[in-house]
Image 1: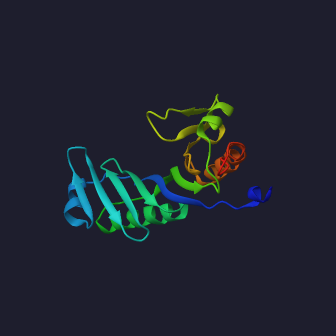
Image 2 (image 1 turned 90 degrees about the vertical axis):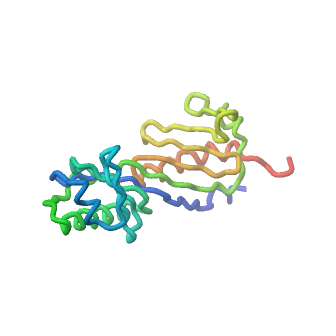
Image 3 (image 1 turned 90 degrees about the horizontal axis):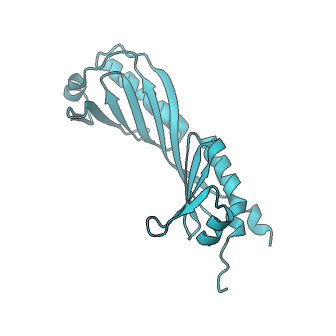
Length: 187
C-alpha cells in the first residue's frame, strides 16, 4: 500500500505578504484625495489601497513603508508592489522602489487521509501541541524552516512560512509524520 506515499499533494498558496519602501515621504491626505480604491485611516496613520491585477491590498504609511497582502504568488506580490510604486509616482511622489521582501506565505494542503490528532501530538510531543478546547487543530512548528503548520483531523493543513520554498519543505517534512497517524476508515 505504498501507492499513498507516491501521490502528489497540491499546495495552494492563499496569501503572500510582502513589504517594500518608497524612499520618500508620502502625504497620505494627497493619496486619499487623488487616489482610487483608497480608504484613509488618519486615526492609525495609514492609507489602505486595493489593486485589481494582481489582486492585492496595500497598507501605506507616510514614512514610505508599504505592506502588500493578498497576492497568490511571490511573483504576483512583486508585480503588485511595483504597480503600486508606479501609481504613487503618477500621483507626484518621487518614489524609488526598494527593499522588496516577501515576509510571509500562507498555504493550504489536503492530505489524502484523515489524521488521529492525539496520536500525532503524542508522537511529536516536543514540537507539536494540541488543545482541543481552544482550537480544533494541532500546531506543529519547524524552527529551521521558520514554518508553522496547523493540522486538522480531516487531513487539511494550513502552513505559514517566510517563503514558498520553506512552505513546500514543511509539507515534505510533515507528510511522513502525518502518514504514521492516519485514520483507517471503518476501524
